[in-house]
Image 1 (spheres, rainbow, N blue to C red):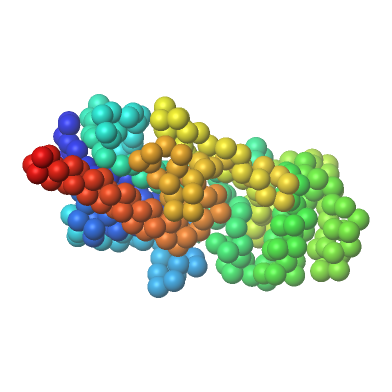
Image 2: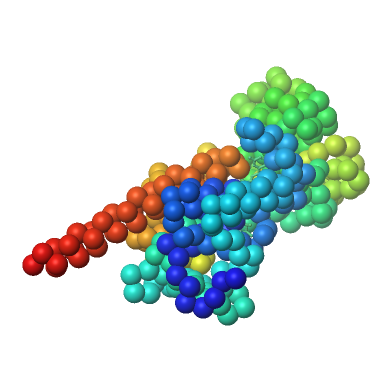
Length: 318
Ligand SMILES: Cc1cc2nc3c(=O)[nH]c(=O)nc-3n(C[C@H](O)[C@H](O)[C@H](O)COP(=O)(O)OP(=O)(O)OC[C@H]3O[C@@H](n4cnc5c(N)ncnc54)[C@H](O)[C@@H]3O)c2cc1C
């Protein structure tokens, strides 16, 4: 049970792959660590986690439950709940929890993930993660050889269609509100047998059938959309750092919290791991980033502990 004024070496905000992996590293480094987790990992709508070596196909909830047990087995604490605010206090941080409790930490690891802003199209939300997909490495194998539609809302539709063509030879690109493919893109898509459908999509029906505003219906087993990926990092704004836009192929994909390759942000004492800092991090990558950030936080604490010990030793000797 977490109480007022409790002080940890590290509070990890977010208990998905990134946060739990960071906490595991820190707990094994004999650091006192608290993970506060709101329990809404990004991949919760999906049935299974793919491309996670050694745990291929595990349901997300099961993977994270295993992770929580592993953290707890080394003395790490896990608290279901939400962090409401963080503030700098003395030489560390105060972490305010929903419900009124507050804890202290010498360092923070932000592992809060991102929010997928879905295109506003009837039928998308309820199919998200089952027949409405975004990532071929997460779901491509599961729809291999099936009828897939790419509903474009930005500049990446032609690129996405070419990518998904690797998993099936039945790909339709719905230009919808996205950018009209260039002549070169059209040539490339036609060469690979991708059909292009122009006109606006009205919504999805059945499994993932695409209803056009002109009334036409194109039967599909799965539909791919691009989400706007927004880092869940508003918490650290009071500490002096905010998410910045992330671009790829000349388009803004969303926002992320900037950090160095180890996850160290521009705010001393605050690290980031996983999707909050890197929109493209898959689960195993997020876990690896958590491990690296955890190790760097431990190194940073060792520096502080050593500097204090040297100071104390000198004052005794003086
Ligand atoms: C539908 C779908 C399917 C996917 N399938 C795969 C797949 O098969 N394989 C793969 O590798 N990747 C997959 N991904 C990507 C995967 O979801 C991410 O790689 C992964 O979730 C990133 O981990 P994370 O720890 O950074 O964030 P998350 O897993 O999102 O964890 C963040 C945690 O922080 C918590 N949190 C947020 N704010 C607060 C707060 N203020 N206080 C306390 N807690 C907070 C959240 O509730 C959540 O539990 C999929 C994504 C989606 C959308």
